[in-house]
Image 1 (spheres, rainbow, N blue to C red):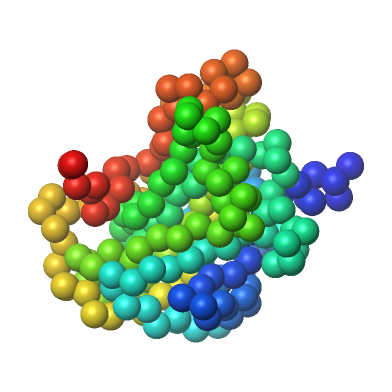
Image 2 (cartoon, rainbow, N blue to C red):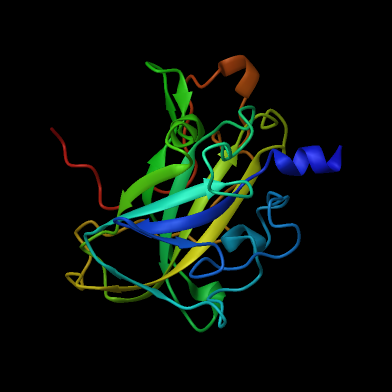
Length: 233
């Protein structure tokens, strides 16, 4: 049973800039314990990157230009088309954060650059959309930030057990980036900075959620608003 459960889980397997892909072990931080297991308690430091550290000394930084497209790809154990990222039962939102590296990881201030929840028109969660795209989600590294070393934190949230406290399953991973070419200033208003742990509460409506009853309706993605904000039409 344990092996079956782990095979249902997921990890950030590679990242890409354009057509160039980088696999797990290059710029993606290592995790502690069984690497496919979710974080059981989001009030611990593991919620940052599925490890207990900030920046990983043994992990190099991937150079990336602010304003450029950046792709993250989740898989279970390989990047073959037959690896469907995560079990179809493990549905929920995707969130991507960035935080500038600090000497003390407790001082990292995180801001959200991407989120996708439930689309009632297609009846699909972000996990479904990513699975349909072979585990891939494309984001843009914000132009209006500061140059420097960052952790880009990816997160899948599986809601199939979220109807009770501590039932939601968190799958965070971090990539180490060296960002250049930015405007070196934030827009006004600036990002909503949060801390990990600390950004989530056990009774947040996007974490304690009646998944089987509400079926995606009225779902509120946890965490701060996305930066930069979406421009009105």
